[in-house]
Length: 222
Ligand code: DX5
Ligand code: ZN
Image 1 (cartoon, rainbow, N blue to C red):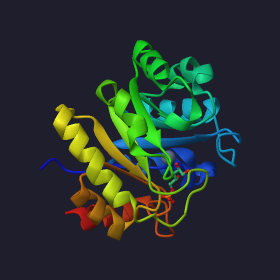
Image 2: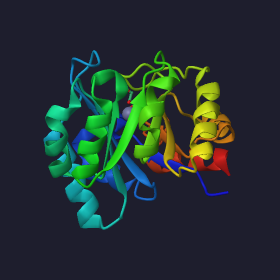
Image 3: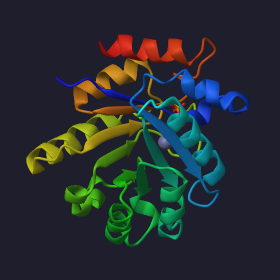
Image 4: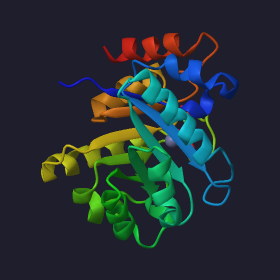
């Protein structure tokens, strides 16, 4: 089987040392960038200037990592072009954030970026079925978005199994990503349930540094 991809969330990193914190995860497949607008979620994180900085470090280091932008933003259509220009490789939008999810997915594709869709823990999985054939990534939230360091919601395993089945039935090789409360224990069970890419913030950027955090996760998945 193909190894599970890891997507460290820089939300949990030390922004005073952003370049070093990015270099510490240079072996990870994805760089996960959490944008929060204070409207869709009850928190504000960061926006275009930080994404541009991430892109500059990635390009300077030529790591080839995928810049995976998770937009916790109401009506994301308003900003897709700017996020594409600021350096995203993939843009993941919440089905709860727009009445026109299909149009927004097409907009991302037209911008030449990989479209992704994401569901909050309380949203029925059916909401993503109409766009499933059109996306390169499906993200299942395993916490309520807005904050790092929350507890994993165990109903997520069953949701991942269902979406895995739908993707296989479609013959889709879209990434099946999970975000929130991912640590060595939950990572192993998510891999078994059929996830292909795991976001991890606090379990990577912990007190012993991101290299050790990444190694711990990889060890659990080996
Ligand atoms: C939550 C964000 C997550 C978060 C994950 O709103 O979307 O990406 O940074 O953090 P941990 O891994 O600490 O739950
Ligand atoms: Zn995220």
